[in-house]
Image 1: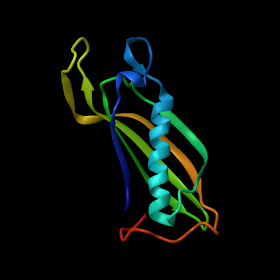
Image 2: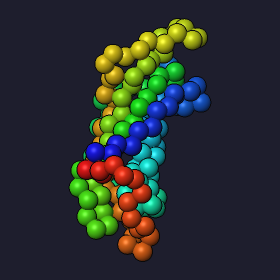
Image 3: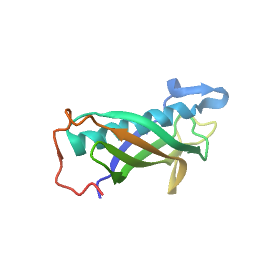
Length: 134
């Protein structure tokens, strides 16, 4: 099964609230990038994010944390695709340190979501990868 993956470090500019807390919208942005990669892999087109069925924020994210967002298809129609998304904190900044980081073993699940993507039939150019999509 093909899984799209984005790994990023939350910087000081990503912090939106006191104590270096990053807002949940930043994780949603990562899910959008993962969705775009999935659509390009399956259809050769960026497609459109139609709707989220649910989004669950499970743990806080802070500047200095390293986040991995993952997504995969669970259903594929002729123009619509149902996706599952998960975001994990795999390394976290040590509070009070300018540069220390702790590796999370295992990574911590910080958010999960389900959403629908669509690609207009006229835009679909077919599967772009050799790997199975589901």
